[in-house]
Length: 281
Image 1 (cartoon, rainbow, N blue to C red):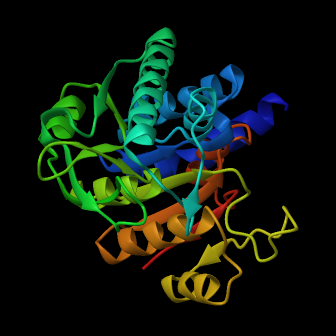
Image 2 (cartoon, helix red, strand yellow):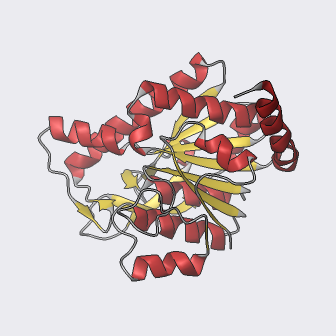
């Protein structure tokens, strides 16, 4: 890229930076982009740039690959139902261990790149409370309330809160919360301007077998149609359900982007064309 091209990109970004300065963005990070150190470093660098230009970030993360690896090493069976992990007591222990380790790794990477971050479990300070979804899913839960005080305190201190998605139930015992659902709940509670869901695909696809068939804009009704007609399957179902929930809960826009694509976060937020799928109320 020539110096002129760089200048044009920066010039295009300026009005977006001015518009979003002081606004809260909730970024959900997970999937294959967490597996490789280079990809993680790239995502963290993008998050830090958003933070430096004055956007108030909350980073919410899952850890599916890490959980799968630990579950496998412990000889436990992985089972899913409607895109959610069936979580018995033994699996719950593995989930919490894997997510806390992933949380520490993300915080360490932010610090390594010169940022400030604090790692939080949803159980810390009653940040995230929940309830079981169903008996069939075991300790897989849904969020019932968010205590925003720890998040706001961190933001006001210039620190990025990094949240792993374990909630406490009525007895303060752990629940495994789908990261997309948790991020939507946080975004609603924080009255976020944007919720960015990082996926393993180039946004929402009109054809699941064609990775380039990205739908650039999607309404809530469109998302619900994709779920009901079976075109949205497996992990995309909770993502779309979470996006609709966030939009109907007051979030201004939801973006679904490929976390493995270089600088996808910056391209989606700071350019006119974007790179993934944007949803609005």
